[in-house]
Amino acid sequence: MSVIVGVGVVIVNEYGQVLLGKRSSTHAPYWSIFGGHVDAGETFEQCAIREIKEETGLIIQSPEIYGICNNLQTYQQEGKHTISVCLLAKHPGGEPKLIEPEKCEQLMWCDPNNLPEPHFEASRHAIKMWQENKFYLIK
Image (cartoon, rainbow, N blue to C red; front, side, top):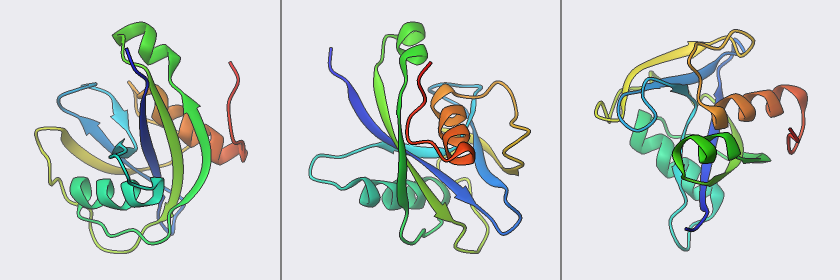
């Protein structure tokens, strides 16, 4: 078994809300920030820009890395071990769209202090690290 590297992107609008999606396939019915697996030869920033465009149609600018999550709870539950590089991006304007309805059934802007449940582990950790200005959470 190998460990998979992915990115999770916290997109924040002018009201301090974060963009979330409700998953409809893998990890359904969990709410989560957007992101995905890093492709070979791709930077974390390139991956973040590509994944956000593919999933929401938004074109984010200059996402910044702020932390790393080691998703052990998900590994214990599903047998898939992922490391998430967490990035922060400002909402570039425009309405996010459900481009991949087979993966995500609903979008919403949410107060990061009142996350919908059930919430995906990596997303919860990424949002908490951003709020607390931490690079890594030790459980």
